[in-house]
Picture 1 (cartoon, helix red, strand yellow):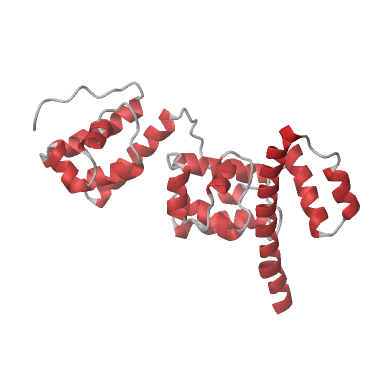
Picture 2 (cartoon, one colour; picture 1 turned 135 degrees about the vertical axis):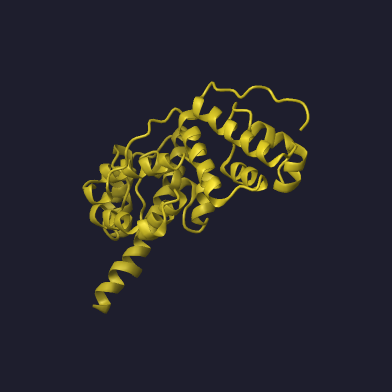
Length: 260
């Protein structure tokens, strides 16, 4: 099996336990890191780092590591449980019990509950979330705003995408969608109300309803050069949220009204 490894780093105990479990899998399979590399498609250096305990490996690395050692589905699930705990501990997150979706009654409740779901899944990276959900359903910027409590999912499809990104099984998603419908509602501009975002919500409404007087009041005075980059960023965000919301109002709520 080659020369002995350095002791597992238990600076973050949960991360150390994950590394120890990975070492046990490799030992049971009687594989060198070179052999494990050929089976997993990962470099020996990546595999060694994963089992060192100094940094939490990626979810993909953990899965491939265990699979290459001949791990069963149950063993992979157990390994992912260790990985989630390691991620949460490494990032210094406080794990909170996720409330029943049936008890969610406000936007704040829903926002915090979605953050809890995200953290319970090990706080995956934004790109990993997008990979799980599908790029066409969950933009990186949207995922970032949701997990930072700056926004709520804008449509039912985006809500489903976020739940997929956090590994919530499809059969468990309905209560969450019911909570979204109850708190946010179809076609509503689902952004947490901060002073700046409220102003841009008003601006969006002035554009939609053709209220030139309101638009002029909101856009005056002209921003300085230093502020224009921020204004441009907010305009992009405003337009994105507006189009998503309007599409849902036109093709969702409005169509159902006409059909009924």
